[in-house]
Image 1 (cartoon, helix red, strand yellow):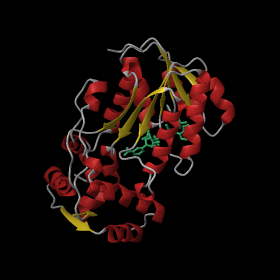
Image 2 (cartoon, rainbow, N blue to C red):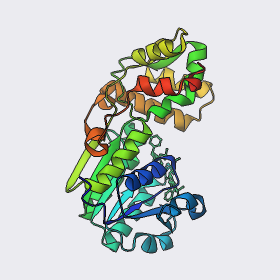
Image 3 (cartoon, rainbow, N blue to C red):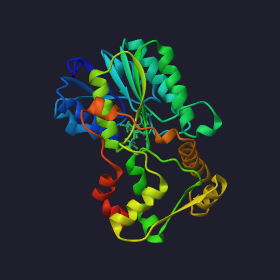
Image 4 (tube, helix red, strand yellow):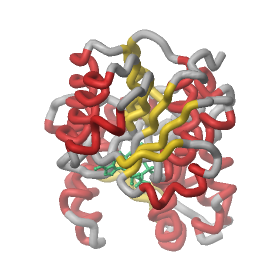
Length: 293
Ligand SMILES: NC(=O)c1ccc[n+]([C@@H]2O[C@H](COP(=O)([O-])OP(=O)(O)OC[C@H]3O[C@@H](n4cnc5c(N)ncnc54)[C@H](OP(=O)(O)O)[C@@H]3O)[C@@H](O)[C@H]2O)c1
């Protein structure tokens, strides 16, 4: 199954939450030549102790890219958190991969990545996908759906207030845990061939009504889903203190959920990680303290 385990595998952004899990998974699945790229090599001493080669890698630093990609057969490019800079950052990484003779790129994209202005953060992912396709290299574009972890940011507030605000017409979101998505990416780096774009999802599309019911079930407190038009939802977020741009991006995700883009359910997690994706209920129950339970 892991036919590329003896090739030289690079993970970019390896000190992030996703990157660390992906590197650990590569080791657990028997990869023998793993390179962890990061802006701050000092953070990855514990991976070095496990036999991982640590390389300085910063997409903003063109001078770091040639040495970071040298000798690499396959790379997992983890999308950065540099919103607004990501097309330039990630396109630089793709060019460096091609120049170094990399054969296969795995990339963490987003559902329904497209160039349209309504796509929110998906626009940067779309243009990165285009750069990868235009490179001529083989690729596995993994469109990671919403992390289950995203719910934890405001879960305690939602439960305490008893109100979960969302959009009218919500069709659901197939939340996937970051760990499942990272293990999937590692599996693709170890096994994928050819060119493909896959949605990486949890086991079911969960609507806001269903999510509110899960919060109630887990905490024992009543939580009601309240459905609003997009402009009202955004105004509420801004009034609650979120920056305008961030509120706009969050509402764009929810509009995509109304359109149905986030309700897709696939078997990609199981195909590449070898295990079934964790259900949202199980994840929230494990993290019940973040719900204030
Ligand atoms: N699907 C979702 O719901 C969802 C939610 C949040 C984020 N995301 C995406 O998934 C990615 C990984 O998530 P995470 O939770 O692991 O995020 P995180 O812990 O905040 O990590 C941020 C990542 O960005 C990398 N990075 C930042 N600037 C970089 C640069 N100049 N060059 C190379 N890498 C750079 C970091 O690498 P080093 O620090 O090691 O250099 C790190 O891997 C995020 O960056 C974001 O694109 C998806």
